[in-house]
Length: 68
Image 1 (tube, rainbow, N blue to C red):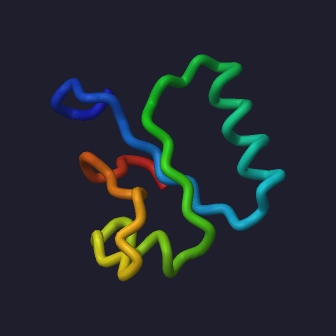
Image 2 (image 1 turned 90 degrees about the horizontal axis):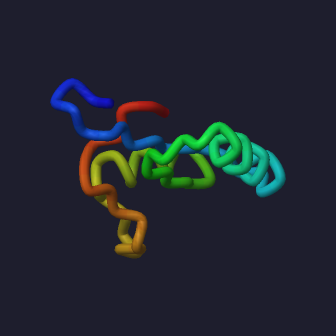
């Protein structure tokens, strides 16, 4: 839980689909129910964090990610 009792939002920065799947499955197996967003690289991560994605994709966070 976050400082105000809100669930933490996780931002996964991973360009390898197999590794991303492994992380996602591991979190699911551990019953981690946090919101998970994935981007492929550091540039996309910065765009996500600062909400400057020029393509305006659906990857918009409801709050700041607490773990990267």
